[in-house]
Length: 274
Image 1 (tube, helix red, strand yellow):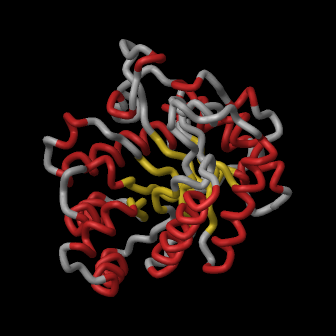
Image 2 (image 1 turned 135 degrees about the vertical axis):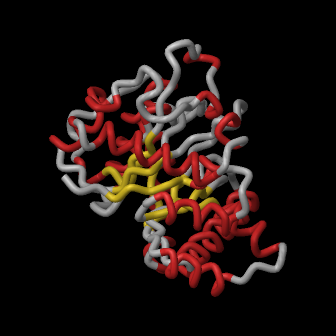
């Protein structure tokens, strides 16, 4: 089974955007998952998108996904209109960089209203329509610590209720663990409706209800059933992008290229041994 191995640039903070791209390419990744915040910072310090596109092309890296669209889920009135304007701007930016998709994140506001699946599906459908105008597909993400969409079955139900056959979800083993859900909760989720698989692990000592993104460790260095996850996704027909996404500050203290090489090696050991 051929997968596209991708490096999410959160894994090698606080390197510059150019350093992240070069490290991903030199380590042997075929793709890089970029953050809009990094692109904005790059532009604000005089960086040019054309130069960035050339660096990506010269490095041989594709951009299967960018992160992330916010504010679309539970804002109203003028605030919602401004959030959608910003989403349109980010979708256009992703299109300029040749990105195939973007992650649409759920609310993490603790004071948010309860999840309304139909309303959220309508809002996500509006995002999908905006993305299709510029050739970039928003993907529905669930976050294990979100008060609103914290389980994979919630994300999949939102996607199904759009009625859009192009709609996809983002899978992430950390968020499956953190939110207390699994692929058993979505028996009807086919592999081709998984837009991207974020890849990471969690130490056995981590406390689920208290854990944030920073607890993530290299694939295989924790206790999550990653081989079984990959095997099940393969059984369901998944053939997409596997993006190593870590936020571990210990790794951030190490040379980006060293971290990137280890990340690819450990990911391949799990995926290709599954």
